[in-house]
Length: 243
Image (cartoon, rainbow, N blue to C red; front, side, top):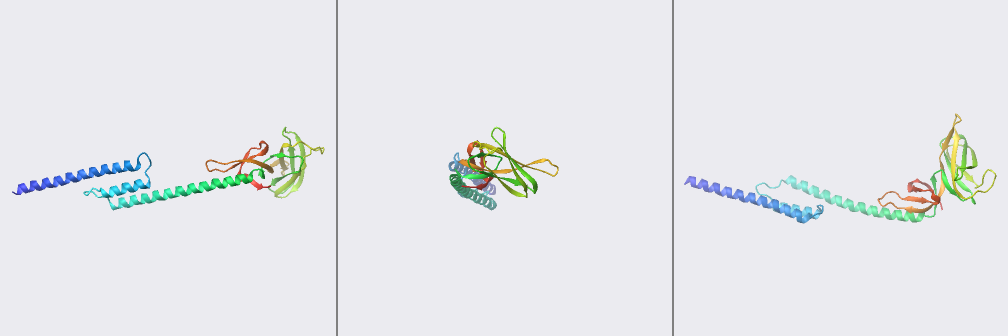
């Protein structure tokens, strides 16, 4: 009698165990089906994540329930996912506003005169041309040599002794003989001499006219296209914006 009861009890336990194993396998299948239905061929979003989490809670294996720590970790992942999505939306909004701001800046700069660090400029010789030389320290004499598009020296401007800072110069558009020259592209080479009598080149800042603006499609800095084939410069390279 005792033997019969033991066998019957073992059979009942085995049946219960087999049933729970079957339920566990069914749970795995449900989770897989839910994941497939929720995400499809797309990346796992917050809605799909919640569906998976709820399905997992409903179909826990009674013999091996999910650890509380694992659920906390999953909730933390969901919170991080939600934060990243919100951050992406904010960045996209900022990017859109930045592009709009660039477009407004572009429309206001076309046709304006700007001062940039360069040694070449388009010169209208019917008017006086003004530039400046960057002087690092006090020097005995600063010279600006003007050459035309063919490299021919047409004018030498003596600025004399200069202290550290910016030394302005004016060219009337005439050569050494006082004859007016044609308008066009000219190069301005500024220099001084050091204590050893050696020539030292100095940087010049000259005016240029903005003809058009190229907006970056990747969020980079806009480019200003200059008149007379003077090329393009970045907005940050502008020293002064004129009329």
